[in-house]
Length: 580
Image 1 (cartoon, rainbow, N blue to C red):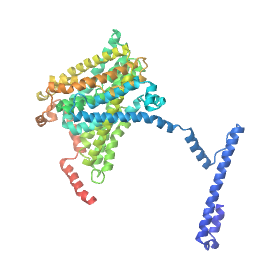
Image 2 (image 1 turned 180 degrees about the horizontal axis):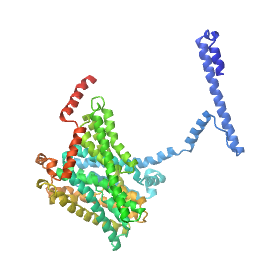
Image 3 (image 1 turned 60 degrees about the vertical axis):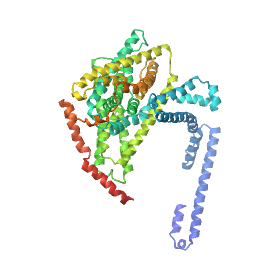
Image 4 (image 1 turned 45 degrees about the vertical axis):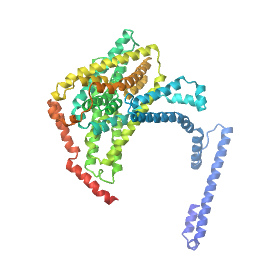
C-alpha cells in the first residue's frame, strides 16, 4: 500500500490534484491503519481469553500495540502502589505535625528566653508524648479518632526506623553543616588554631572512651551488676556510645554565649569523634568473623587508618578541586549564581557517595569536605551563592536533626524496659561518665605540653568538657545497626541503653549547661578576639609547624588574595547594571 501511494505521487496526474484531495487521502489512510490496528488488538484479546479458558498452550506473541496496552493494564490492575501511598500518608502526616509542633515549641522557647529546655529536648519530649499515646492506647480507642484500626496498625509499622535512610538521607546534611557553616560563620580561625587539640580529643579520646566503657560493661555483667554480654558486644557498645552529639551541645553554647575557644574544642571533638566512632565500630565489628589475635588486631588497626585517611583524602580533594575550578573560572561572576551554587551544593554528596562506594567512611569524607570548603571554597564563591548553599544546608540539617530526635522520643516507648535492660542502661550511664572523665583528664596534659602558657586548657575548661558529653543521633543510629550486625539475643539492651542515655544527657546535662557556663564563668569575652596568635608560634613542634606551613602553601593555590577578591566583587557590581 505504501509503495502504491509513492508511485502515484510521482506522476503528473497527482501533481494536478488539488490540496484538499491529498489531505483527504492521507486522512483516509490513517483511519484505515487505526481501524486495522484496533481490529487486530480485539482479535488478539478474544483469542487470548479463549486460549486461557479452553487450552493450556502458551499464548501467541503479542502485537506491538496490544503488548503495550496489555502491560499497562496489568500494571494498573496488579500494582498496589496507590494503596501503599494511601497507607503511608497517615504516618507522614503524623510526623509532619510533630515537626511543626517542635518548631513552634522552639519559637516559644526563644520568644520567652527559656534556656533550660533546648529545641532538641522539646523534640524528644513531643516524641515521647506521642510514643506514650501510641503504646498505651488500644486499637479501638485509636480507631474512634482516626476511623480505622488498620491505619493504627500501619502507623505502628511505620515507626520502624531504617538505618539506611538515616545514613544516606538524614545524616549527611547534619555532618556537612557542622563542618561547613559552624567553621565558616562562627568559629573561623579558632577551629584551625585548636585543630591539634581537637584531633587528640577526637582520636585518642574516643579510643580511650571506647575501651573504658567496653571494659566496665563487660565486667559489670561478669559481676552480676547488669546484663552479661560478650567482649565483642561490649566493645561495639563502647564504640557507638562514645559518639557525642555536636548539634545540641553547640546550639546551647551559642545561646548562652560560651567562650569561643571552649566552643571550638567541644565542637571539633564532637563532630570529629562522630566520624571516628563509626570507623571504630566497623573495625571492632570485623572481629565477628575472625578470631581475636595479634595478626587480626594489626589488620584491624591498619584497616582503621586506611579507612580514615582515605576518606579524609577524598573529602579534602573534592573540596580543593572545587575551589580550584571556581577560582580559575567565571562561575563566581554575576549571572552564574545557580550553576555555582549547584556545584557547591552537590560536592559534599559526591564525596560522601564516592567514599561509600569505595567502602570507606562517607561520614569522614563529608565532614572533612565541609571543613576544607569552609577554609578554601568559601573565599572563592560569590556571596549570593554562599548564602544560598549555607542556608540550604543549615535548614536541611535542622529539619533532619529534629526528625531524628522526634523519632527517638517515639521509639523510647517501644523499648523493652524489663529489669535486666534497665540495670544495663544504668551501668551505661556510669560507664559513659567514667569514660568521659578519663578521656578529658588524660588527653589534656598531653595537649598542654605543646601549648603556650596563654593558651593552656585550665581546670574550668576540663570541667566544662566533662560536662558536655551529650549523646545523640550517631549513637542512636549505630545502636539500630547493631540489632542486625550482632548475633546476640540481647542486642535490644544496647538500643535501650542508648536511647535512655540520650534522653538523660539531653534533658539533664543539656538543661543544666547554662548554669554550668555561668558557674564556671565561661561566657565569651569580646576582647579575647584580639588575642590572635600565629599558629606557628603556638606550635613549636616541628611536625605541627610543618603541617601549618603546608596549609599556608595550599591557601596560596586555592584561596584568592584580597586584591583578587576585590576584583571579583568589582566585576560583579559592574556587570549587574549591564545584565539588567
